[in-house]
Image (cartoon, rainbow, N blue to C red; front, side, top):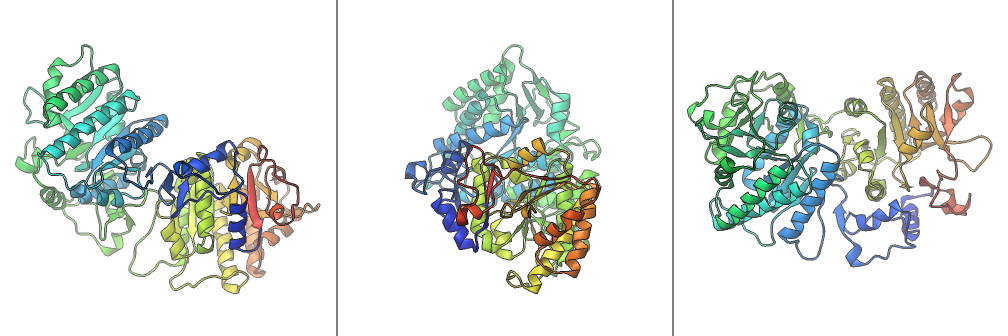
Length: 613
């Protein structure tokens, strides 16, 4: 790691990073991942010259898993299929099922409602496993912040059901699914016109662990069952691949409804194939909505209900709303207070809700993001509670919380840092990062990441070394103390850094029992200076005691908390383990300024900071 913290002014930092070939942000605010991936081998070029062919870029504000390849000409459907395969392969390597959803604008509201449904049940993990294959631009735009792929040709118009272009696209989908199975991806074909009462994936994993294919009966209860094409678990076994290959050939010759074609193939399924049916009292099709077939569902038994027997999107929307199963609030936001009732199945009869109960979260933001809506702008103290809540959830998943106070002055540096981590394949660290935005432009820029507004209504720009600035910094020290008290492991980090490898993994390996870990941000004197922008705080009693003292001192003596912390270290609690990172691996920004410490060895350096610029 090398810090640019000895450089004065953002422009100085930007200029130096670009001159030294450490700028990983491409055109139009996008990561040049082909370029950034060189960070993995530390083969950094001398400058920013790159060929057009090497410049495959990914929108920086999108989460790590999202792929949107930029080119002068729109990508073909076959090229986009390759992106689907690549993303699904990466998801497969993480383990579990890939929820594959063909998304379109006709289902826009239903898709949002389904997302709210899963979030209300706390099934963020399933959303992380979902790959939205968007067949039109509005749908792709709506799903910003999720794992999405464009899957439509340039100039493609709206597709109407039961037309030749529609069935041609559906045939390409069956081919795509076969390719996914051949690469050993476990595919759960899913549709968003469903209501989940609990986790169907967990149900299948528990009750059908060795099945080749799992689905439910989408028919009228006849002896010959009808597999549901919109709720189909496909295990990539030789039996499944053989059957699906036959379906592809049949679909090519006989364009039509692949659900009916699949039904026709089941009596001749491969010998030894395990096709298992989900129980009809737990997995219900939409016929109940139409004619009451099967009787009123028992909410204590039902796992999933489908609205697939209703003709037309408006009919589906109307029925869900009438039956109290609509979880989408005002202005395209999830009413999570309301949606959380799904957990206990205490669903109200209708949509009446009090204003007090209507805490809403933007639906297109990833699950971890919290943005509480209210009539009056939230206070800083209320926003601090949101930070604590989010950090607690992240802590429960294990590991460090990377806490970054983000502002618009560092906008480009923050994007470059994100590109840096993505180029190293450190998406996990980005998932552990909580951006605390102190202005609206920064908050907007970080859409798609875990972010919190942390500024009062009407707050203007904060200038360094002013009373309002130090007051905010004091509130930050208080917030950090509260985070430590709730046992969150905090890594205070800044984005004016270049990582050559993972400093978190380094600390976990080399300093597992330390209370505080940092590097020397000074000039190499005997009395070391802790770096406030690269500080690992383990929530031990020693750390909490020292930080509590810092809070009190900072309250009385507004100023640079880095210097205040330095003054406290000689009097640190007895037995406290303060450990310093090696200066040849963790470099401050003084090298950029006057060459202090000599030219970094890229094979040794973990982080470089620009904090002396």
